[in-house]
Image (cartoon, rainbow, N blue to C red):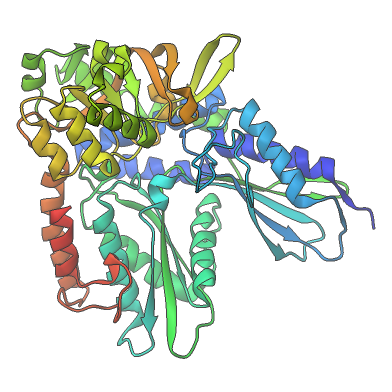
Amino acid sequence: MAAITADQIYQTACALMLKGATQLPASVMDDLMRAFDEESYPPAKAVLYTIIENCIEAFRQKASACQDIGIPAFTVGIDPQVPVACDLQEVLAQAVRDATASIPLRKNAIDPFSFKNTGDNTGVGAPFFSVRLHNGGGLRLRVEFKGFGGEIKSSYDWIFTTAKSMEKAVLAYTLNSVLLSKGEACTPGYYGIGIGGYAVDGVAAAKQAFFRSLSADRVEDPALVPLEQRVLRAVNRLGLGPMGGGGDTTCLGVFISRRAAHTATAPIALIHQCYSSRGSEAEITPDGVRYLTPHIEAAQAGMLRERIGNLLDKAKREGKIHELTLPLTPEQVGRLKMGDLVFLTGTVCTARDMAHRRMLELIEAGRAREIPAELQRGRAIFHCGPVVKQEGERWRVTSAGPTTSSRLTHESAVLARAGVASVIIGKGTLGPEAIQAMRGRTVYLKAVGGCAVSYMKAIRETTVQWLDLGPPEAMWIFEVDRLGPLVVGIDAEGHSLSERVMDDVYTRIREVYEAEGLSPTERYIQHPNTLAGLSLEEVIAYSKKH
């Protein structure tokens, strides 16, 4: 039998990465549109509008829908009867290197000890790929992109077989995990739940489960469908909503996969997948390639654009939008109230983890004057690691969306007290330390996670400082024209939109527990390793403190 060649695999992998990064699957777009149509809370509907608009623009501009593609991964199905004439690891690595440069994709891969960026999304063991047997007469290849905003909210634990009810344990564990995420995993999204096997099998099963969102045929085990639907309904009764800002839809789908378990215990893994569920699959034979994942196409994009209308134009006509030029005066900062909608014009500087660390080191050393002058010009920090492409001596930004802000709570507090920033833009929220430090000084503006193309459109000019930190972590200086929409998540009086929503969620989750026959004081994971395995009351107490 003829062999599948290296060139076939390389070309297919490159095509799948372009499709996967820039064109959401049609099934995911259908889920988002259904959520938009059914949403009754106007602010949540506006968030869903922004999400759908971003997905359409990403397709039209062939740009990465969200700047965070994680580290590219592949699932490979191999038919033992069909020979593969290449070093699969090296072929996929070369495809990742070239796709990173050509699409482009953000350069995320670093060495975990030196933190040095590899520059091309490859490294030790990367790209990651798993191999399974496939008796279809060819090679199945699926590319998988997963941002880490959802990944870091994922959890793993053990359910002992002395548990009274596996179904109740799964439901309680999922509800607790969703509550702890506070919407920072870019809700509405998908939950993959893996049960059984060894530790690695439970996690792998959870990951494979949520990638069923890429297909219209989503049922793996008919016996688990009632539990999947029960968990989905329960999660959506919490009212956490899109981006944790309140609303009807927190989850678009729940997918559970099981493996045989040891007689003593079964691992449970829950993986959060953001709404930007990106991936693409193809089947390669010696005779050619067949692409299997239906993606958004021009006709669907046009139809969706017509259906969603333009909510933001309506909000502007009704005077619900603040159009502001940076830097903001103290009076302007004080006038912004929690929940207000904002567009910004002026100088905005990005800063992720490493740039924050450097700024704090300079402040602590009494060298704050060495912080780039551009930050003092606009006094606005954007928690963002953009996708950039160098063209001669200039930089072009292709995607620029927010990253999770809560992990930068302490750093944001220090910068607010030092007077470095009067505006902080990011995803999710900031913790109590930052809220206290920001009083009378600084506002926090929530951007819609994953909407990297929509925010990129506001950028008119780009320069860079601290490029030695690596492209995602460098400080990029954007001259922006109407960057938005942004929502005031924390105002200068200390009012927090996230805290207001979570207070309602705490009430609702107790009601859901009661309706589902769950006890808020019982640990359904008998010996928990993670917070999600605690009792509901313990989880709420922790959540309120953090």
